[in-house]
Length: 141
Length: 141
DNA sequence: TCAATAATTCGTTATTTGGCGAATAATAAA
DNA sequence: TTTATTATTCGCCAAATAACGAATTATTGA
Image (cartoon, rainbow over all chains, first blue to last red; front, side):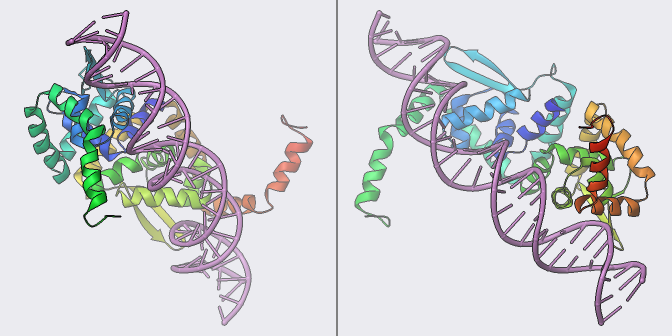
């Protein structure tokens, strides 16, 4: 029962559904998934750990990068069937199709470049935006 | 996406899984489900409304009684497939088998009698049982 | 019509969950 | 070895959720 609930709880969050859908096309590294769902690295990492605990995804470490993929054929049957159901069900949903397009763009960028972009955004990169907002614009103080 | 999430969220609670499993064998009224999961009527009613909103179950009103059953063939394909997956997956789980046995007992009692028993229990009615338990039996003080 | 009853809705409380940033771990590069 | 970088874990806060009892609705029976 515990294992079943791990699966159903893992599937009960929209972000995690999107992550699974993204992985349908093949293995991705964390920074690519972060780029797709546009959430903090710690948040995405937590979502991935929940999916992994439910055995819906598997991980592979390569240097500093972690690569995630959907559970393989070796997974429990309940997990495999759940994934089958999910993937066929979500394929046509607008949100998922949108993600799929965006993912194609993301894959064009080298993951290394992607990571450094994200790091810059989290650090000083946002300052320029703040300055503009604070000195001018509709939300000026 | 909204409809899909309604289904996955509905399946993310253990009580609701047990309710679905109970309904696999056929239609049941609310008081029978209350008896099975041993939760407050308002709680069970809420769970049923969540399952119903996800279209996993359907309802039929007969007088003061509401009868619930699993979604029929007319349900959305995603719902039907989810139910198929769930029912086959949970059938062997200890907790569900246990519920199935208890449900057989519950069905032996007339629902009307069941309801009045429950009403008495929620009010002062538990006293008689308490007295017996307190004065004698395996749990006597 | 009025009381009883099956179920639901409402309001409140406690727990769980999702989100973030800071700190940490692990690995690569200088 | 030291620094940079990728990802995770931790600690905190806000939002969502499950539980209950009280009040309400809908229906039957007196």
